[in-house]
Length: 153
Image (cartoon, rainbow, N blue to C red; front, top):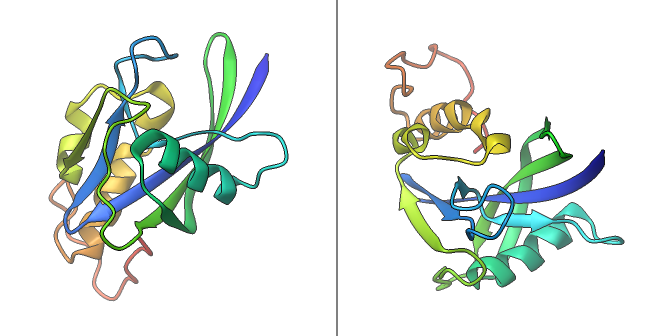
């Protein structure tokens, strides 16, 4: 079974996070994901993510820390996904280039959208971490424990 390594960028603007809808012809076409793509031979994950953000949504980014990593097994492939926090260059405005649509959404909206299978497992954690970063209650209504450090997101 073939293994793909994928870099995914988490871009946050205020309370919203950027997602992109895959082109219909692609694997898991028509579903939402975090922008990014497959790592080429000889690239680091960070180099891959910078390249993919330009190709997919037309912006330069600074790749920040790794937020999550996972491997998802599809019937025909395994995909290792590295989710990195990213910052867009000053004044950069994303636009759909190699995706059908982009959308800025609130974290609590993520679970209501049809996401690629590999991203599904991180949606609740991302919503919780973004809410904790903003000092808001978690998506399930449970407040963050007093004195607990805020997740670095």
